[in-house]
Amino acid sequence: MRLAVSASTLSALLAVSPALAADCRQEKAIYVDADGAYELRFEPVGSVSAATSNHFKVKIAKTDLVLDGIVMQSDEPVRANGMIMNNCPEGDVTGDDIAACTVWQGVIYSVSSDGEIASLPGEGLEAAAQVLLPDFGPAIRNSSIWGKATVAPWDVLTFKECGQ
Image (cartoon, rainbow, N blue to C red; front, top):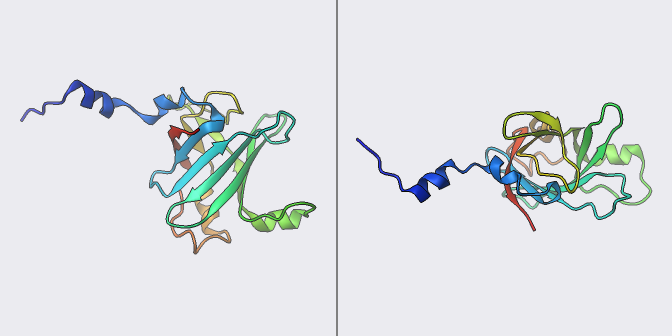
């Protein structure tokens, strides 16, 4: 049996998300996990003097949960240290306050379309094809949001689209 496929259909089938990441800046990149249950949406930091290099939101499907995320670059070796938080207090807070509302914390890695792993790009740079948040799934299961979130995410999220 021979299957006939039009050129436009073949182009659509061969188009993969990582190729689209090259046309997007990191602060506008949107990623999803393999099950489509988690969406990670980067947004502009809004200040060149900010201590953070990236901001993002994590939306969990079939819930009203939207988690806040930040990335701060460390020195030697340079790494993108991320935190995902749920309803953290604002203003003068203690380390214990931040620890209580932190859902995940760790290094965020970028994965290129050819599989190269590197530090997450900062604002203004080409978006990563994928982002890797080591132990993201287990952290969700062991966090205060488990129960509202009933599906643990994969640790790798793939570029979905470029936001506004």
